[in-house]
Every structure is written in C-alpha cells, then in structure tokens.
Image 1 (cartoon, rainbow, N blue to C red):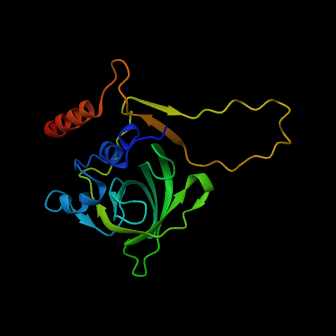
Image 2 (cartoon, helix red, strand yellow):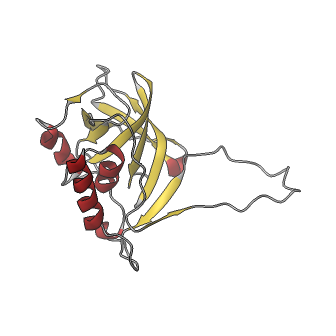
Amino acid sequence: MPLRAADILQCVPYSRVVSGVTLYGDAWTWWAQAAGHYDRGHVPRKGAVLAFQPYGPMQLGHVAVVSAVLSDREVLIRHANWSTPGAIEEDVRAIDVSEEGDWSAVRVWHTPTGQMGARINPTYGFIYSEKARLNPFRGMSGVRLAKAMPLPDDAEDLPLRKAGPRLAYADVSRIGDERTLSDIIRDVKRAARLK
C-alpha cells in the first residue's frame, strides 16, 4: 500500500521545530511569508532555513535547516523527506553551485547513493531565525533510528562502508497518548509567546 504524504514526516514541520522559524504552509510559500517577519538573505548562517523553489519532483518546494557553515559555498543541513520518504537526515552536505555564489542553485547530498545529488535545485535563499541555535527534534509521535548489531570478533576481514549521515524515520500517526502535529504546533506557538 503506497504511503500518503499525511502518513510520513514532511520537511515543513521538521524545519519549523529545528529552526524555530514559525511559518506554516507549503515550503515554497515560506520565502514570501518570511518577508517582514524574519530577515532573509543569500549568506548561510547556522540555524537559517534554506528555502527551495518548486522544481522537478519538489512541486511544493523544500525547506532545510543549516546546522553548520563549512565555507561560503558549503554547508551542512538537517532536513526531512528528501532522499527517502519521511526520513530525517542530519548534517548532510549542500553546496552552492550558482554562478554568482549567491546560493540560488544548490546540490544536496543523496544518502541512498552515497554521493552529491545529480539535480541542481533552485532556491530562494535563507530565512534567518531569531536565534542561531538548533532545537532538538523529538518526533511527531515516534522516531525510529536504525540500529546495527555489533560485529563479531572475527569480522576483521569484512569490507566496511564509509559512515554516512544518521537517518531517522518519523511515524506521524497517533499512537497511544503521544502528541499529534497539532499538539506540537500548539506547543511551539506557546513557546514563541513566552519568549
């Protein structure tokens, strides 16, 4: 049975929680919504949201949070629902491939292939959060991290793969007394009012 978008974690609620940027709606609308509420620009900063334009399979755009600035043309980002539906990817590379060096076009790490993605993605730029810190993402209802079994002592001759970024899957269906997306949104709004 195919997954519906409502069944998997999307980039928007993930980026909202991690960045503290309280915008709503499809990712492609964030850039315009931020005008007058958040500073925007074309220079990466930790905690900023990189807003992607709709392009190719990203019909609703995409948003990702800068977790580290490595250089003026390379950052690490945290985002959801990019390489694998519903997966969280933390601290993966994104590089500016624009001719002007203004972050209007980027390539992003593609975890399943273990390399930079082939597609060049147009972006609007960066939406700067009020505080350059990353909030922990505690999940929508339950985040499951992959866990590998320890290698046996006689496994010295096994070929090892280069370590990749950590992935997590979020199940947004309500289970027991766990919080819904509405609960999280309400809590984020309450926290914003207290600041």
